[in-house]
Length: 218
Ligand SMILES: [Fe+2]
Image (cartoon, rainbow, N blue to C red; front, side, top):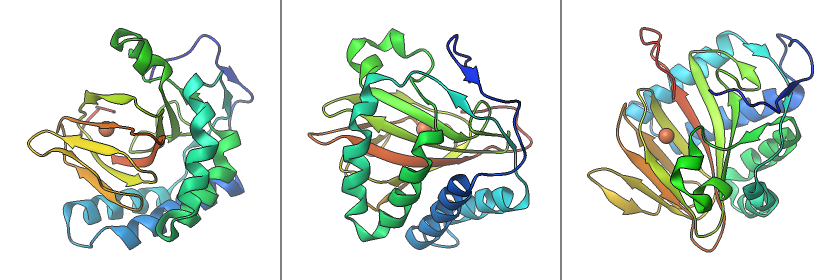
């Protein structure tokens, strides 16, 4: 992940998760297991990711950054997810963790125009440069403002999104589709994908498994 000039590390880090971080990761695991089928690619990725997070904790490094403008939609998106049973617990746990998160634009976002630059924000919960710093697993959230399209992208790690809002997802070879709140989206390594918000903000949690044999990150 890129560094930001206005980032402020508030201490040198600990190896203990806060109660809010533990609860959010545990709830994300439970939600994933409830939503994805075992013995599918997504189910097996969920097993690998959950196993790694249970086996060890990375260095916890709190960080404060100036939130991008899209974050004004965060509260509305969380409140909407809280009304849907399949993701209500996760929305509550994520809401409790939100004050600890550093929301940032995607690195290189300025090359994709003002609408995208001002209309999205990502928070890395676990991963290089995230709240919990480690290299094998990434957990984060994306927020997209109403009417904004997140850019096409791809990455070596496989990925599962837990969909916590209305909105459309794109996958090469499949086109645009609506997973719905409480849906999941699985992307095998390197598949081109995107998403776009309709009238409501788009909110999703994502988890990625980074093959230990690979040095690549998302
Ligand atoms: Fe992705």
